[in-house]
Image 1 (cartoon, rainbow, N blue to C red):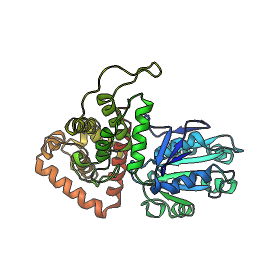
Image 2: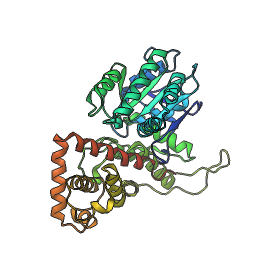
Image 3: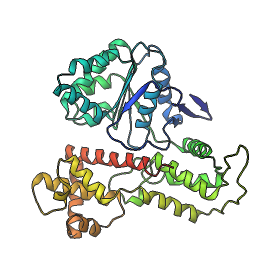
Image 4: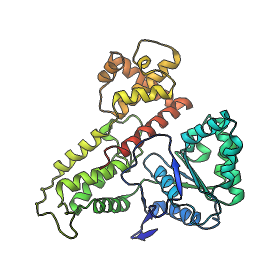
Length: 396
């Protein structure tokens, strides 16, 4: 763990004691071996310093924050890093969806005793995106068991969530209260010092130079409306701030376009001259970077249909069943919010519907988000899904 100028860097690449069971096969982000924080994230540093003690004073730590603040990065990094010392077999690390499926499989095959015994032997436990276990009582019950056994054995337990435990909708009160009894650590998006450190490091690791006149526009882009990784729902895509992964991808694109590229031979720089940079040319690259990571309408339709247990063809078809109408409305809302498509273009994709139909559905979902927990949860989880995809898209 390095600290310089009020910015700290957590290095996760040295140890690989744990394997992370992911809920999907998504590509790893461009930055997956280090975490950068600043003074606003000082509690993160203190919590991790305690976790690596044997035994930790606070064995249960819950990191929470919106998409783009580094929850999954911390979970995956700590799966490599924990524990420094331990008596268990290995670190158990799961994405919430994978944990739920493992619980279900164990129950179906009469394997719960063996499944639970693994938590009796584990050296550390990590579960990412615990809020996704809402309304899955079997998995929530197994997590309560795993937490209780881990605390009794004083092993490190790391959980991540989009919100604080006492604000998580749909979770069992017994699970929420147990998590709230641990050390609850809010995550903040990186500020300017942290972003600067990230940009310089990412460029250096890729063998390119990044000058001060290039860093300024990159940071301004990353800290735009809504804050990094936490755009308010419904804003046009052009006004949505990028995730950390998008920021680092943009850093490398700008650096490779305008900076001197170093040769593979040690200490020898490429003799070609750098292209002159201007605010307009940098803005063009950043605009292209953002546009390249917008989800396609087909992906939004199929993912939303799967979330609501519907068929994509039905979302685009004429059927008006209540559950189908709700799923179609959410898909249209996301299509308008996460892409640069007009209401008319969205309507054309969803069965040649009129733009006024899409507008009505959009406004209806906006209202439901304010008063319907199920719709709000769907928007949050689907938006987080596409944000994770955006973070890993276009990895150099």
